[in-house]
Image (cartoon, rainbow, N blue to C red; front, side):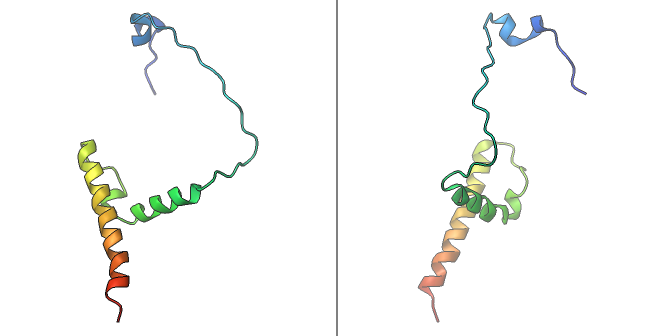
Length: 86
């Protein structure tokens, strides 16, 4: 269970910053987003890489490097289909 802090102990209160919560438009039902499937497909391709299935990396740069390695691997496999046809 999370520890509850008093409002006077929060960083926003100490910095004397006013925080306002603004309620946005409430979407009703399911709305299909354009080209969403492209993003979902890319995440599915990256999900096949065992190293990327879980966040093991300690730094953002190494995580980004592994994503680039996964994309390079995926691209070379796809290009090899067209270059080395039997």
